[in-house]
Length: 270
Length: 267
Image (cartoon, rainbow over all chains, first blue to last red):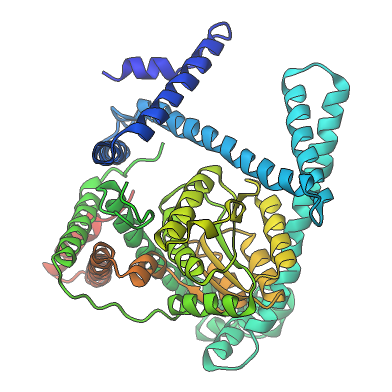
């Protein structure tokens, strides 16, 4: 029954691809215009029905029994088409995101606000990345490929790594504040963290190396205390949090799926 | 493709039962049943943090994490909607950097709507909600820069956070901002506890919108959640007892326990 939809969303030969893209854009604009101009009393049930059907599709796909040989059920093949619709919406919103960047930074440059040159650098970097990225993917110009390589491998990756490495210093300053012994909770945190850290490093293990490896006293070795804290105390707390989050997620999903969430995000009802 | 495991029926029954309990509690709450909700200090601190920003005349920062458009982001936006209403009332400046384009479009509408609801649409600055980047550390550096440049007074971080959480929290701490954070990522909770003034832990995250809005639907859902947790906790206790009886090979009870354990065993 859904076969034509799957065929529609399958890969198309390059010759007809532009027509499909143009058709999709026109269709999307028409859908948006229709939604904007639809009276509120019709829009509300329409959104509720679409939300319910979309949720039902994913729930049914997850719970319906599968054929063990193919690891699929009757709905699995349609998952790709459904996720492409999601990607399509994501692509459209990305345009709005880029427009936001252009608006904020374009205004900074136009009005020569403090630090306008940073905004200029951002826009130049963004445009360069797009231009050289496209030339790298679709063009044959060796110089463009080199420039893209410098931009991506030489700059972006390294700047990402720089930001990531800052975390090491932030961990030190945050843990210094957290571990200052000011209350019973902070003391427990400090002692526990100290034991786990000792269990992680060779010097910690060496401290209790004189204890036997078997029997009751083996459980007092630092590495075993660390393991006990992580696998018993910590794991139990994390599982309790995970249970709570799971049920909380189920509750909010239900509210959205059944459109019970009125007025939570938008004061006006949709 | 991820699917429910072979023995789906016990899981499906528990899930459907939990869902029915939640719906039942929502309906009860909508019919006017009074419900009690315990005090959550982190959520009480929201008003304190906004008040502080008003007194200092400095902006309020709201970060919805770097996750995509999901129930986690929706929950964050629900909390931010409440915060935006307060800031609209007091005339605070807000900053809301966003890492996901879909979240950005919805966030802008939510915040604009909050200002309209408070009767101050003219106070909404379209540049206050801005898309920065969908790359994790580019976004992190953008937010850290905003915090430093704008010298924010209060920071609210709700949503899906990963390694960048500590960058935000520590930068906020450096400028002396009062910080309230909540995330569903259990790996990031310790970082927030260490660096923020208040942290919302675990399912308190999903309780936040009910707590601050006192909306009957959400309060009912929250009580339903608690019943759901009670059901799961009971299953854990019964499972532990069954595993013990099964290991001890107690006559009759041992066989029943084995059947119970087998029912919930994932292979």
